[in-house]
Amino acid sequence: MQQAIGKYRWTICGLLFFATTVNYLDRQVLSLLQPYLASPQKFNWSNTDYANITAVFQFVYAISMLFAGRIIDRLGTKKGYALAIIVWSLAAIIHAFAIPIGQSISAILGWVGIAGFSVSVLGFMFSRAVLAFGESGNFPAAIKATAEYFPKKERSLATGIFNSGSNIGAILAPLTVPWIKTHWGWQWAFIIMGILGFVWLLLWFFFYEKPEKQKKLSREELQYIQEGEEELKTETDQNEEKVSWIRLLGYQQTWSFAVGKFMTDGVWWFFLFWLPAYLNAQYKIVDEAVMMPLTIVYTMAMIGSIAGGWLPARFIKKEVKVYDGRMQAMLLIAFFPLLVLLAQPLGHISYWLPIILIGVGVSAHQAWSANIFTTVSDMFPKKAVASVVGIGGMAGGIGGVVLSKLGGALFDHYKGLHHIETGYTIMFAICAVSYLVAWLIMKLLVPQYKPITDL
Image 1 (tube, rainbow, N blue to C red):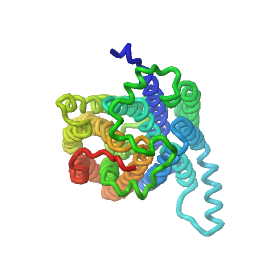
Image 2 (cartoon, helix red, strand yellow):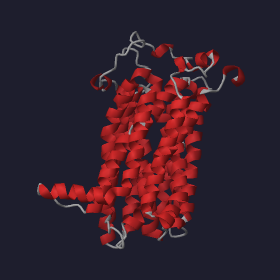
Image 3 (tube, one colour):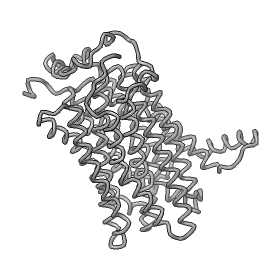
Image 4 (cartoon, helix red, strand yellow):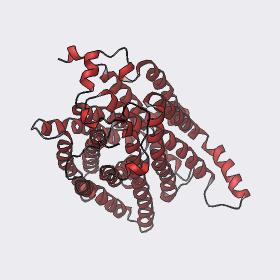
């Protein structure tokens, strides 16, 4: 059957996987270098300094997501995705020049009478802001490409597969960044990861085109992709009319997605940015020694991403609607992060127990993410998908800022009391319950499947 239909759509999924891998390689470099850059021998950052740097990334990412979705809906997937990766790859490279950048910013701020941040913090805050602006385009573009190239019944699986690239990036980073830092210097870790984006760009222009114009796509596969789209077609599908944010915010479906992202994205950001710092603070694990724990955690997350994309099919086969199958799967997934509550109580036995339990938590997040993204393409016409994903992404980014700033404040407070473990216990508890709370609110907002047909 697959041979008769064709499988070019999986080539596109492979490109989305590659882009997401590069995306997370670029953003993970800083967290791996944090113990070295924050040390008294280097820049002497406090936890609050590092929290401010990560919070700038998350805040700019959040705001940019709103505009990224709109830009991608206007430019189209091909041009929009290309623009995003050009910006974020250049931004990754400029991290290597954070000190001279920080000196310039510090001079400007001093001229207008503003002070408060060190040169290194200013340089990295600026670099992270530019990186966030570029990286904000990844998921709106990837979800839009998935909606274009996959039928609804395959979208969560395709999303789970390309989203697992975030875990591959998080695995490859600890395998490469410490080695590059040791042998070539920390600046080259940023430069090399940035160059990878331009490699992807060449492949993107060669392989991607809209399905209707894609010569490598068979007529049978195009028909297969378009199955089940009739209920989302509208009178304006054939023109270039775009939907305003205000109108999209009038739908409970938009708010359901945004709340789900706000409540849970911060959990992923927290573990992505703070896990190396946690292993260093509590177990004195740094540099090359961090490779194995992080590899295990993000390998588990990769498995969760793919399994989460596959799971709704088990419910859909029971003749429930696609959206309802996703929500049932997400409810089951939401219970797994509760195991993170045991990470600190069991940590005295072996640091491997928190690592495995955190691995379960991030695995559940990726399974959740594979499904929450596809609720958008389940209910909205394709012309609005990237914009809605952008709105939800902004909400998720704001949630990430809140959690990161909270973490930095808690860690500095309890570090001053010589009991930083309490700070991590509080943060792990918040992370553990977020998914069940998010699911309940989403269910209250959209009790039953209701596609948007009046755009």
